[in-house]
Length: 188
Image: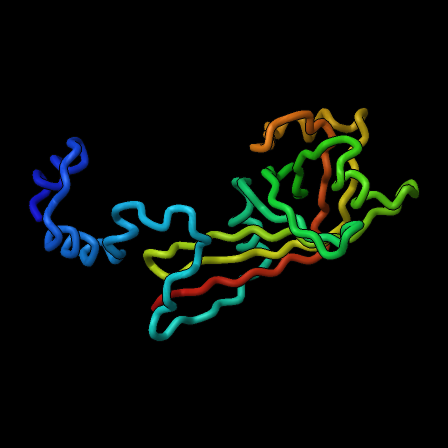
């Protein structure tokens, strides 16, 4: 497919013939369905694995590098209704993970012992999946979830972490990593 024709397709509402779509998808290492945005809402990782994938264990330094930009992670804890996993927007601040939640909300209650200086140990998972190349990485952080009191929020507030869910989410939670593990799956 010529670059000029590809540029034309990107800039104009036109549908190429089926053969062109298959050639383009093959050249990009994807499927026609993905190329056209089909299955956009499906969970990631549904594609088949490569013929001979390899699993690499990541050291702590590489794990910290991967999660340093912040983004979306999942908080895992034993909630009032049993095991609970919730997505949150997070940022790194002074080596700790920081996210926001609602004061008096489920996470506020479930991540609080009610005892000063006693925090609940939780897990936090961050990943990146590249379906087109059939590879990705995952980092698991385990440590105490600490409610940041209002007088200490100057540091975490400076991170700029903003919850996508919006609403009043003025309680900052800090996870101080005690154990960090990770792995990367390579397609070839």
